[in-house]
Image 1: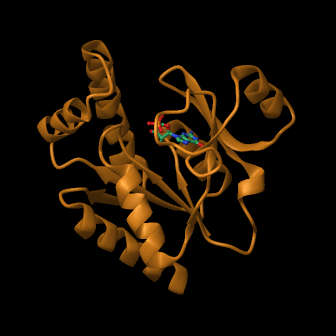
Image 2: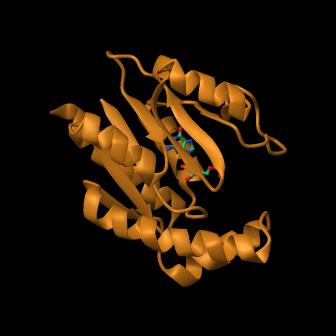
Length: 179
Ligand code: 5GP
């Protein structure tokens, strides 16, 4: 089964997904991206870093299950990351998720919500990675994503506490994979 997990920038998806993966033993697919590798990130663990030209080439070749342009960079799930007989978590944005859910309506979709917009702003600001105008753009994008999340995902989980949210998602996955 494919498990799609999305949420706005700064909601804490990465941390929650890592905990869910650890608790459930389900692998998180490694995406390809054309964005720069950040400090502390590892090739093949966090992402496969490829340039824009190669990304487009691989789109042409049909290597991607889905891809999207997020904040000006390409991100995509490689078909080679997915095996028929294995559960896998896709930590992807809402555009990519909509493509996956259209092709595979049986996929499990979970959207991670911030406790409030004020809290989301605080989290993005304290992360201290982006300039002010980028923060505003991300907050605006977050509102649209949250709207999509509430309407189109099977489950909506609030990340009020990382451990609690991870436990809730792990239970959702357990119940869904048991049937
Ligand atoms: P970041 O650059 O902060 O690691 O990720 C930015 C956004 O890209 C996040 O919302 C993340 O979920 C999304 N993203 C990461 N990998 C993929 C992918 O393979 N496909 C799509 N559609 N979005 C992705």
